[in-house]
Image (cartoon, rainbow, N blue to C red; front, side, top):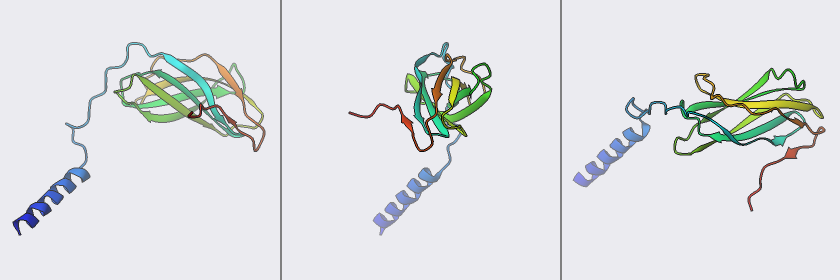
Length: 152
């Protein structure tokens, strides 16, 4: 009978640990922001349908807030890139690089879009990184563009 109570006690303890919320001691403070964030790959068009596109790029790890956003500024007018699309990510402090992927929706088919990318912490603080202006053209309705390396 004592073995049964011991097993029951272990089940209760493990259940409490697994269902508990993180305490202040378990939440890490923000990492030190990187002195200089650099885009090391991209930006590039990963995927495009007639009404949406996904742009991806990789930077050195920006540090700071674990909560981050990739941001694309875009438009059909190269001189007015005032539309924005954002995607939330969570930084991995153990990785020296961070990949951002941002989905742009509501696009028009067979239309050329100009864009540049940046990133910011969850509190809105910029990582002070900005790409050059790039462009892509959305395909005709029912078509798609895929530009993602396939595994070998």
